[in-house]
Image 1 (spheres, helix red, strand yellow):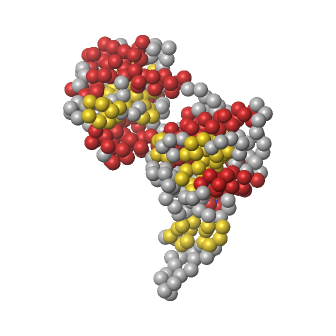
Image 2 (cartoon, rainbow, N blue to C red):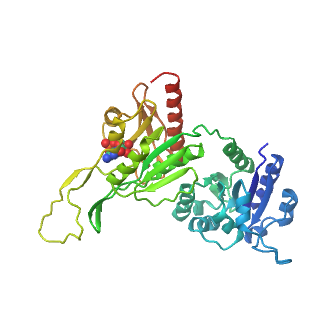
Length: 405
Ligand code: C5P
């Protein structure tokens, strides 16, 4: 029995008729269910059906036009243990991504403090469209849980990806979430993520294309599993809303080192996912450097190697994991890094693999450690890759506890 307070948000897609089954399954699991409908959803499923199944009045407007009673989105958001938006249309997804608050369903999304699940549904071309994909990714990066659309026959008669996941799949995702093991409870995890920017002058810097997505996905996975996460991030375009994540924004390698060093002593696990610039300008100009001679030489010096420096002071009870992004002799180079930086294992991603590495939503990794054969994984979403990495860290902790190094 799940026995949770579940808020179900239904938006206006044909799959709305399946929401009735979601309500029934949740009620069977002992949940209290309240339903919020968007105005358009009423065309696809009647409030009467949902009210009868959920045993609660259906909410559409901010207030009841009959008696003026107020439907507080804040109270709903606080009441819910989980908010499930199913079906989630392209229109509502875009508004959620942007923070538009023009109906009760959306204002409740903005005020909800609980985990949010969303099950996209739309025609295949709308689903594939970069705008929709961007919105879905924005929500995932924010920590919302996407229950992926499935492939099959669509209401338009076309075949492709865009069918809402079946009600039992949606409900299973929710039960899995609540029954998930909190196997990192009370563990302190330090993660570095994103690029660093090294100041040349007030308008220029040395940076790189790292999006920070991999490090943020790892932070999210640890937080979901109960860890206290300190996420030291370079400049990225990702928001984090999770009570278990203490995010510290930095700009340069020096600042990242200062923060990582401060939190390392208290960490049980450190994951170095940042793409730290290797060099910084010797002189960091206060004024904009003017164009003058034909050639211009920028003198650079090494930045602190954060992973290496912290590897040198690593205690036996700490686990350090690093990344290697290689273009050639991948395994040899990754092994070298493993030793040089005192990592427990290295996550290798090759730039040769399509869809892997910088600025993608997917990654293809190989885990390299000292005493075991490399473990190769297929191309997966960065969220799923994060699960694989965190599972390997869990295995490592277990093997250390069992006395194997
Ligand atoms: O030496 P390389 O940059 O390839 O090593 C990659 C690993 O070292 C990554 O885990 C990265 O986060 C970390 N690193 C670091 N500080 C640096 C350079 C790399 O922590 N200055």
